[in-house]
Image 1 (tube, rainbow, N blue to C red):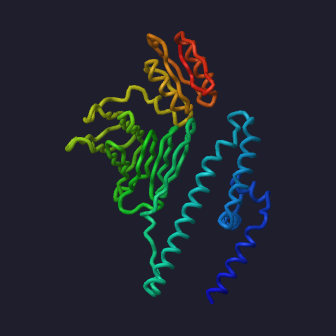
Image 2 (tube, rainbow, N blue to C red):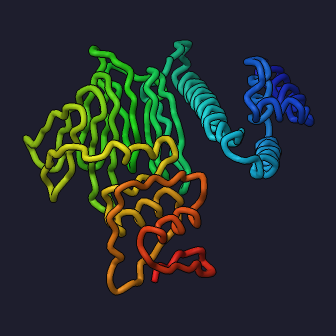
Image 3 (cartoon, one colour):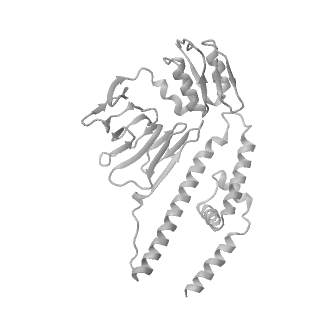
Length: 335
């Protein structure tokens, strides 16, 4: 019976390994396939690793074709979400297959007929925003998250009693209200607990930078580096880590959080901070080599990120004088 089953599986895989219709693949890339068509493509991808290479090649061709389409009619802006959905489907499928293999081994070892269903709340996805890009994610509970360049979020496929995620980098959260199931963002320094709200979190362990800014609702920030250090935020307040203690201040300019809409705010920031923002936003290395930092006092200044780094630097040059050049390693030197 096992040999017959193995032969059936082999024949099924052989069928799936046949050349996939490219029109169907293009439909899948553009998010136009039905559930049955998506299942067909996922089965085809699982059948042979080379099939994934073929899909990636078509994706690259699609990227190249639409790269010249002017903003705002840029369909490529939808691709990260599409790819994220595909990676999520692939991850769930791989976890399911791995669980099935483990169950088969356990069944053979113990000669047991019992079917064990693994708790999906223990299965985590990890999503990272590439340098110079943002990623929008919708979690299982309906919470929306916007990851800034270089940020990484870990979250369960299914939430259990507590909705708990782990963040490294910067992200904006818009949490669905659920009083019975608090939403908790874990970082290297603090835990941020909410019931339903909109807030921004920055957590960079390398620079020891932690900030939580509340735009709507209410959050509780618990310091993991100092026992008993806990602050509850009201709207338009933010808390920062100073040494190992939390410091509460008012939000001076909510435009700082327009990065979720592709806007870089310059108002109220010194030159070095603006350059650091550009480094993160565009995923580049910028070295300041001047003896004295240029003085800057911006009353009004917002830069559309999609205009590119050169545009941003030239706009900054109109505010304060400086020169810059790019070397063979694409490092920007400010002089």
